[in-house]
Length: 369
Ligand code: NAD
Image (cartoon, rainbow, N blue to C red; front, side, top):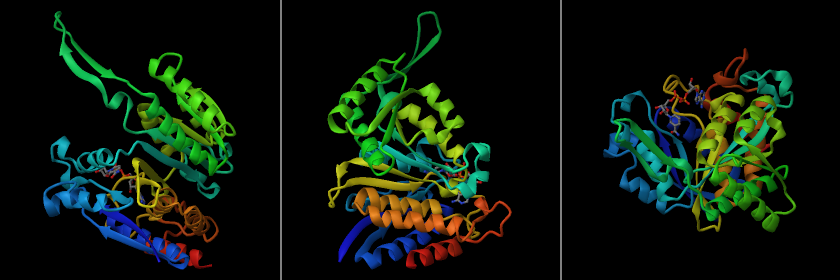
């Protein structure tokens, strides 16, 4: 039996609730295919602070290092919000994990089923078929990390602050490759977003992307868009995109805009892929819901497990090369929500809501059909 070895970091508040349901679904999907899930659960975030005094305990990092991927819940919440900023669960757990595994590519599907368009702030007539796009953000370069980065006082007493946006061709090429691979599994269209009319880094970005696609992926459709226009086009007609990819800060903003347009956080998954290849020859990755720990509904058994389940499907796809199984899980979630009509409170829109476990049970039943 092939073993899929991954670390499970449920985190805080609804994190463990949705994680246990996602694991049940993953077992139900993989067992019939002769795959064994070999996972180890470790504390992270507030749970890490409470159990071992650190948001990312050394033992948890060790568990991750021995694994081929990480399935992450979400971390943080009111219990720890008075800690200093550098000790906040999100910052003290996710940033070191990104650094430890060189997680350079953040992939966020922007998926909204036609039956759920009420969840979107866009008018339903604008998105009669729902939304189905992917936003890819470069995660380790650009202005958030470039040096120099400092505030100084000038001779006239004024303060001056500097951030530096910096990119190298290799960083641009590796994110372009992730965009190309993602587009290959979809509509084959890639839109590279930059600000090449103003920024030097964007001029290099565009030139590198053009050359890279001409050499490696000439069959894919490549277009370019300035970031200000991309922000408008996302709100106007999101489905004109198939896969859009961009640098760190632009991606931070566009991926959040996309999340709002797509409605409920309870449905949104994400993947962050690293520089290393794992024991299966695929990228090491961290897979997590796009939303947070939802303290307002934690402990009630009502959280939507779909984002965590769909993150598990992404783990199978990207870190274990199990495209078909990933697709089966995604189809089961879709059918449960749209055909069976099961809805947790966040996507109920007047229907009788079901709880976390009932939702997962229905998805497992769909998988068995
Ligand atoms: P949130 O995403 O936790 O919640 C926002 C709203 O969405 C809430 O009304 C919540 O009930 C709802 N929601 C989110 N996920 C849901 C789900 N699966 N099912 C049903 N409803 C869902 O954002 P917040 O309230 O701003 O943050 C709460 C905590 O989570 C904070 O401590 C924040 O720092 C943390 N956070 C962590 C991550 C992460 O771990 N990556 C990401 C974002 C926020």
